[in-house]
Length: 134
Image (cartoon, rainbow, N blue to C red):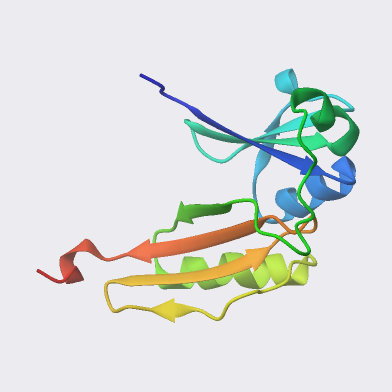
């Protein structure tokens, strides 16, 4: 069984994308990074490979999705509190992200979303399992 997740995302400007995610507090593993790709560490088991579009094209015969028009994937990560969710989204907006959906409060689950500089959609959620309906 798999023990790690690698999310591969095409980016237009690798350095700009790295600065954006570093601004959100993420680090990059230099061992798996070069001028074509950067390995963003999300957790001990989750990584996002930010890959320049020309290099990304070498991995697939399909066209790269225009994320300004279409959704390719929703990447959802958990947070420790509602405040942490809002802090991440607020910081992302300061760094140039666009909020594409207003926050949703379901009582036991709180979520908010943004699109990064390349239009990839990220959702952050906080779940209070003690409030989960029966």
